[in-house]
Length: 263
Ligand code: MLT
Image 1 (cartoon, helix red, strand yellow):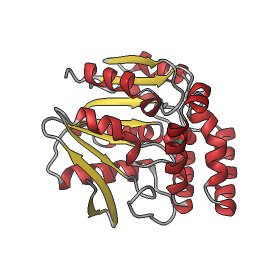
Image 2: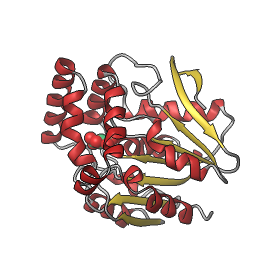
Image 3: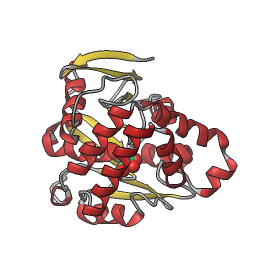
Image 4: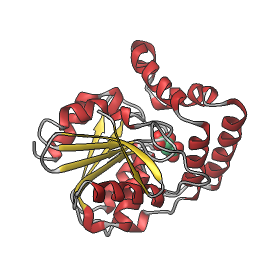
């Protein structure tokens, strides 16, 4: 059930299900909280699971200008404050992982465990920043449809694209629902984000790193680098999955998370 709350001058839409130790899940770009549907259902059996729409996405407000990764992390923390949550397992996929690292950087004492899925610690390269600027221009001129066409073959593996039209439709619809202004603000924020490589060796909490074996956006090598530097980390590679590994292989993904959280 969707809930809404006003914080940091925006309305934030979120879901809050189950009871017990808290798990907060942060979606990627250009998605929304619905990407976590299978995780919400299964983890809420014996955890309190919170999924939210980041500013500029889903049912949350669109804020003007750049919505930085730190601002998004502050929104997550304000949502925890408003719900009386002191510490939680904080997890995110891709851009959600960038926000998760920003969260740890800002609020390490509020983190019980980390989940870093299909993400990386490095900042964008100059080439990556230029590609984001191009993408922003295209979105402003043509909307989200060309972006969905461009991204889908990278987000999902060829097997999923050919055999699971329902999954393709779900991811496409999620992208098409994202507001162009929100997407552009997120692109600018990702281009400006800090490099968090140095932070990795300071992460003290147990960390689960998950990545699709065929992820071309944040490849396995990026996860291996995080695994090498984060002392208490475990790396799980999801077979037959590309970038949105939690949607492509929810069983493998949930199994890894449940084992990590000691269900
Ligand atoms: C995401 O899935 O959040 C984005 O593709 C990440 C990125 O573009 O760096």
